[in-house]
Length: 496
Figure 1: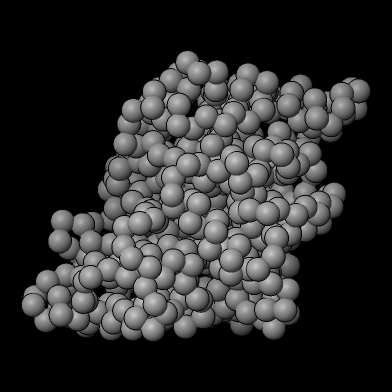
Figure 2 (figure 1 turned 135 degrees about the vertical axis):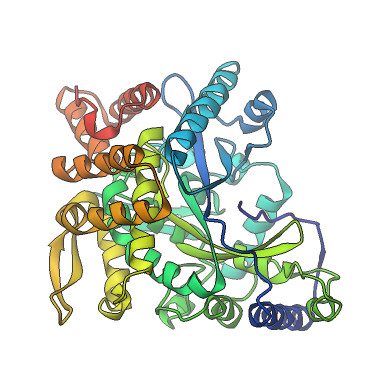
């Protein structure tokens, strides 16, 4: 369900022409909304997972082309670096036993892909950041060969005008300078799509933003980078710094980064697309021949390619998506918060929690975002990335909505899981699936554990037994992959 940047598809436009086309696209979107031309609600969801390739020792393998050639399926595609691939699951209707069907599809597809990868000495690892990655792995020579990645790399560096600096202070401190956007490739995520009607879009997006912090707290799985233990979910901060087109002076002036949580609740999907046009210069100023308003005048449906391409290079954690399928336009919220892994069961548990709680909050008679300041939601996101399941979040309490500090695990278990359960009931999810997958989230909260906590605990035990840092990370990654393949959820994983 995701859009891809295809270099060379159109001609690079001059800036004035490109801005004119963007404005036409915005007007076209507004007309489509006014004329109610969008697809009827079908309760469709979609799923994408970015994956790592590693050898038997847990070290990255730069061979996605060879692996994809053997997989030979359109469900699997390249990603930014040669140790990345992505799997896309066809849209499903949110109802009945869909979660169990998705789990079976993923197990079958990933199992097949892993066998094919094994033919060339690679294995699939589903994790937010591969713990064994080192600085020499994330260089421009290891980017995938597709033109779109080269073009994005060149455009980001040209706009920035200087090398990229990664500076993350967590349990340990990492400072690293890169001459390419390759550090972005370390970030492997799970992306959840939800098709929504225009009238429900704002409520769903606001709800998704509000629960981004709790999502990360429950699912953190990215504790290490370049041998350093950093944040429990290091991936979002690394992604933001790796895609930052702003030199230091523009950051100091408050210019917004391409990877952006946002700054306010919205009233309409057009708020987001208008912000994208207003605040962000285009990475890829590429024009199509389509004239959106003329297409509308002729009774057709415009593709709005300039707007969708521009939107695809602004990395909101909850991104609006416009797409035309079989001549009918629709809108989606793309949730980009979650890391990949650890297991298929964990991925589906994260999805169940998200789809359930977002529906419940979007339909609540008193919206959460009327009581939760947007700045508090953004701060919750940062706190959850830093501290994971141990984060303390700010959440409204009582009729007056006074903000209180609440441990994330308690908030999720006591307040958000009951909402998620009610939301899944509203979708028509079978109670067996509802209870099974939400039970996984409940157990993580009860045991105060997730993928990041397991990684850190095993790493420190191995250090205590005399292994050096590099061998400890490799050994931990080997264990992680074996337990991932076995398939039991991460809260059950042994530490020895």
